[in-house]
Image 1: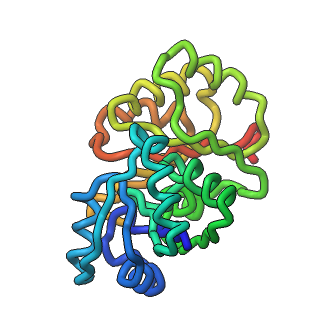
Image 2 (image 1 turned 135 degrees about the horizontal axis):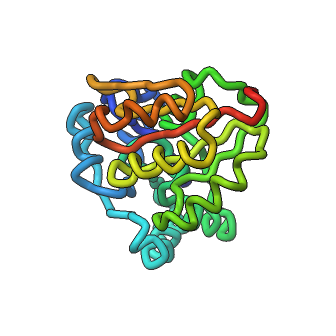
Length: 223
């Protein structure tokens, strides 16, 4: 059995009883950063073998993990924060598990994506999610130009190092659109900013830049 386990995105208490039970009972826990996962395990008094599983070694690690699963081991996959597979390593292992007739079970819980969606105030019947944007400004601008005519609510992640330039670029391409920016969700300094992009650009330089950001853009025509 391969369990895909959601862990807290900020507040360490945001974890399900079921997730704790699974982590206590599996044979092995795969994690992006063992140091981050140990913080959660130590808080809940869980002692289990850990094996690093991050993007750079994902393809190399898969064969070994599949061998463990075929031997009958129960394994949990976690990422540093939130739900694995949403812009974090998971899909390659899940795909291989299915190929090898290994049962895969989701243990749902926290996700920066769904947490941000719940407070954005935009309709979510039509949503376009694209994960992290390209780093180069030219590629990013081309994407924003395509988005100008989209009626869907658009969601993406951005790093602390690029967020300000990205917001400024949005201000150039679609200043009239409504936007919701979330950072540090469920933490002490949680911040949710909402308004027209052109107005957000004016004040964004004063906002503390920390952590990863979730950016949600309302659809065309104010939907």
